[in-house]
Image 1 (cartoon, helix red, strand yellow):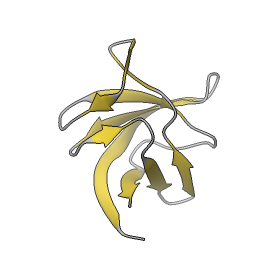
Image 2 (image 1 turned 90 degrees about the vertical axis):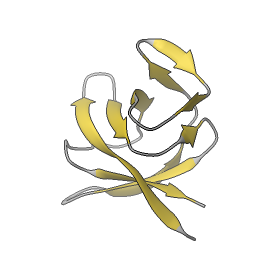
Image 3 (image 1 turned 120 degrees about the vertical axis):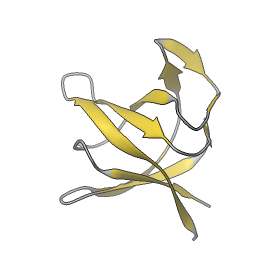
Length: 83
């Protein structure tokens, strides 16, 4: 499986399990991402995401996207697109 860095975690809202990614690449609903950091390492499918509190199917470079994550993440964790 190839992995390509597409962003970083900038915020994590533990009470709702949502991470905000600052993207430097494109991402779509249905993509699989790996989130990796000092104590973070898991893979999950993107089932939904939001930009400016609106649901979107795709987001690109420069966007800040909110994504429901299945585990705790930390600011600075790296987001990879798995293909």
